[in-house]
Image (cartoon, rainbow, N blue to C red; front, side, top):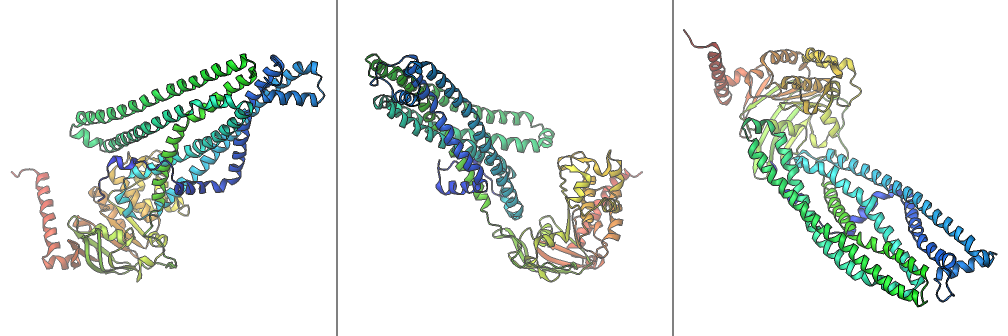
Length: 631
């Protein structure tokens, strides 16, 4: 049994930037190096194109709309543009008309080209992000398939699903928005700084005067929203956990009339989530108007100082207009840094959790030189096996027994004796702590896992059916099992009559976990699934416990024929289902106490005899109750 996990443990945030994690994340971009290189070129091009508009505006105002009195008051761009036009043969008298048309065309061309560049850049980055998400999800699911069953005992399903969904989505936002926007913003800021100092260094310094205020506001917002962001994630994790548990347990909730207390508890958790969101909304409500206020202050300073310079003829009007436009473009990326910080921090936390899962060692795997026989005989041996799920709490204590090929061994014992553990060790879901489990005389640790498990069929009491069709649940993706074999397997376990009554027969849809089918019907499908794969070893773990007596008798008749030539291990509480077994093994507190046939064990008058008498008395009492009072 896994240790309880606090909801907030899932949501602990790490450092905003971790170079080790970032290097590993960037390695996922390598397969798409060509698209990434094109995206970087487009980012550079888009940053350059966004610098064109204000420069063209300055030139149009200074040179064509309101020509300056001289070079001293003209912007550097206007002087360069005038010299360029004169050098290319444009008559001074026609500079205004031709130049204004050219400026308008250039401005429009820059806007249109910027649109297409940003479109291509956004499309490419989203495409790269989708490819990376696809690769990550496949890698995570592949790792989950390889991990040993003990790992799933310790980790809740909701946590593992979060790795494949929410955490991967956070990385997608980093690749498509975070890194790209940060890189593009840095290029844009660098270009604006260069141009501002080129146009007029004094106005440039005035423009940058408000940067310390923006930095302080952003720092405050970053610190506050970081805690708020963490709090919101903790609260939503608690909501998800509560919903998952109570929706799954809804029948129990309604049975015991716990709807009102559960509703009150959910309302409390939901209110806590709302309060956490309201706190984060407060910080955003302060930050963005604060940014607007500070940038308005910067604009006011530019108008006050720059306007005075224009009036005195020191600075051209076009240069001032360009400065105002560039200042707005300069302030916006600075104010966005806090959002980029949140994206980066969430991505670092998600990547750390994902890589922790991917780096989890696979302790049960196929060895380097696996045993892969062409034919499996089906001999099973447990040799002084010691095993425990928790250290210091042994479940099996030196178990030894052997099952010959084609023999049927029944395993009985009290709940917790270790019966189902035998099946898990044979299938190598777990490895023994001491001793050895062998199939055909070869330690299961030396077998190729696929070959070993394909040779063994397991039918459990709690049957798991996948969403799909009846045929898909029997075939489980193995296309070598044709419809004829499906019909044969279903017929042999007497599942065919109820399958044929379904609207579409084998093609009838099966809902999640087999909802809509009875427990007996689900077990019959699972039984047909096991037989369709023609295993050499068949394990039935309480497989007939939830089937009515009539159906159980039909299955027992089928087993009498089908178990011939197969090694079978039948784990059962109901002794009526094991009396025909070749031998019966009695487990008690993790040890083999008795082994023999039904009659031999009754003659011993030991544990099996007591279990038999106990069940016989229960059946006798049930029969008397059904028969009614005697006259």
